[in-house]
Length: 382
Image 1 (cartoon, rainbow, N blue to C red):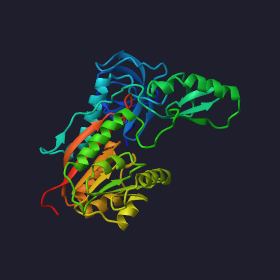
Image 2 (tube, rainbow, N blue to C red; image 1 turned 135 degrees about the horizontal axis):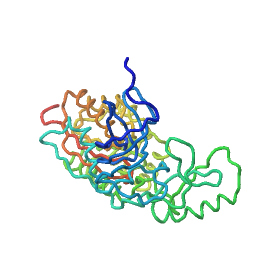
Image 3 (spheres, one colour; image 1 turned 180 degrees about the vertical axis):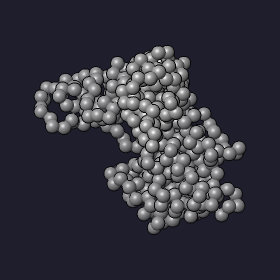
Image 4 (tube, rainbow, N blue to C red; image 1 turned 90 degrees about the horizontal axis):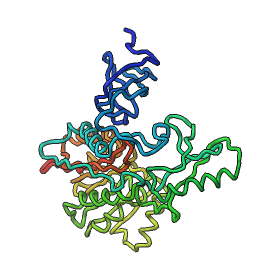
């Protein structure tokens, strides 16, 4: 086997071609792909090789020889050290463009001439958008872990949490320092609004409203019959379930969530609403186990909002077998989404088509992106 053409600590001059889903810039040298964090497309950089992998290398920026057109000055003084953000060095307009491009690259094989690809929805607030976060405290420092370490980067403000929360950080740190306790492990400090979180929305409550509206519109655009059911799988504590109940008409709504605390919160809200089980129910269950016990019908519609790793292969197989008329899938990982669509197409005998796709910028200043896809069963493909 020939020697790897790059060496650890080697200095190179490179041009950044594009961004990867993980957020790093991509450069090439001697036929090797190099991932460079905090790089921007078009950057001409001096880099140092930090890791050699089997098929690629990783590097860190030593010097920006000439910046790319989308590079911007980050507002945060600890950006690049703190592990909370990795795209503050990009203009917000380019962040949106790159996220759309990355998602479309993953989904290109599923997009046909009939598919509608809508523009990405910007966050109403590109900064100060998070209404909850977790800080770490130890040895007098309060902040976030440095990327890939347990070293705390000390902060006095945060540019991505809501401004009212950011203003609490200096006093919070002062109060913790006065305790003067010797800690073996860092304390985790919840940074939340004074009245706490209602548990029904994502961390970006401003963008969450847009996502909920688009999701419910996609699910209910073709009304179901009175004998059909809307399923909200991986439902959390009801972020989509309760708006769906309002729009479901005579159709039943069923939410399914494995996390006991979230399910209990949703069940309590259902009881307070006084709804009949014939109108809405909420189950605390693993989704695969639920679908084995209570298969969906061809006349039903399904909402999927799984965790980052996506759906299990069993869940996709059970849905493909049941063939509901429509599936709306919300994903925060386009690679997992593409894998699950591939499985659905395969297991259903290609009964489905991708009708509509839209990205939502739920986490500005990071590479993360939320994607909403609307999947319809092909007519006459039962």
